[in-house]
Image 1 (cartoon, rainbow, N blue to C red):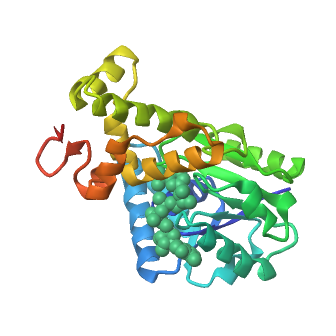
Image 2 (cartoon, rainbow, N blue to C red):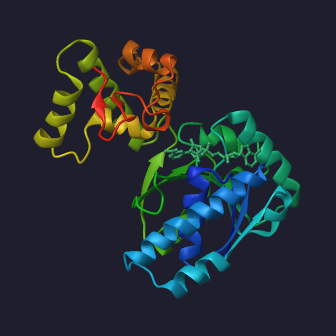
Length: 291
Ligand SMILES: NC(=O)c1ccc[n+]([C@@H]2O[C@H](COP(=O)([O-])OP(=O)(O)OC[C@H]3O[C@@H](n4cnc5c(N)ncnc54)[C@H](O)[C@@H]3O)[C@@H](O)[C@H]2O)c1
């Protein structure tokens, strides 16, 4: 199936990045949010990020102008009904996602492929509540979308081969690489990455190493570009904790129990970079370890 128009629901950090890469690759993009302010901020962010690509000579000014010209915003979800592909990238709450699909459904073409960018919610369960589980897939972009190469493709139990093959081609057309994952908690990236971060927090909690020695060990000893605690602050400690809880509940194995120190940071509101404090304090010129 040919895809030329893409509807994106949710214009937050993921939605704006997804709109950016699709428009840059020539797709017509219709971006929806419940907040006009959110839509305006998203367009401003896309413009700023494209500008940076122009100044680094990754794209030309003409390409940037054409990209911006392919993005339209709307507060009316039903406007996305005529799109060939819809990517839901709204807040990570199952009832919000279910309500979006329910409201959108009566307006959709029979051929429209529905997808969710969820990091943790079961694709099979989301799909089962729509009128098209065979045309429903997990479409998991990584943050920041314009930079990260990988996209996880997650088939629900009912997803048909044509839908999967169509999305494989779409990923290729974006210049990105697809990894196929089965629909189990955390898919692939978060199933491996977040327990590693959780283990780094246990290593800190048990006093095996300090923040600096843990991050340095993984950077210099395992060739990781960022230390696990630095990375946790980048992702957001609340997000890391939420994903650990999904793994713990969904896989029913104590090896996924969240570290009490991670919980304590989240309870303190020390969520990482976004709240200016996490395993590092970002309020000064350079980040300072908080333990
Ligand atoms: N942040 C990440 O690193 C990351 C990575 C991969 C996937 N995800 C997933 O992407 C999704 C979005 O995450 P985010 O980080 O962009 O969140 P965000 O909070 O930055 O953005 C969410 C947006 O959804 C909008 N929204 C809420 N309800 C809506 C509705 N009913 N209709 C339309 N818009 C609505 C909000 O106004 C907000 O602009 C989540 O499912 C998340 O799990 C996030």
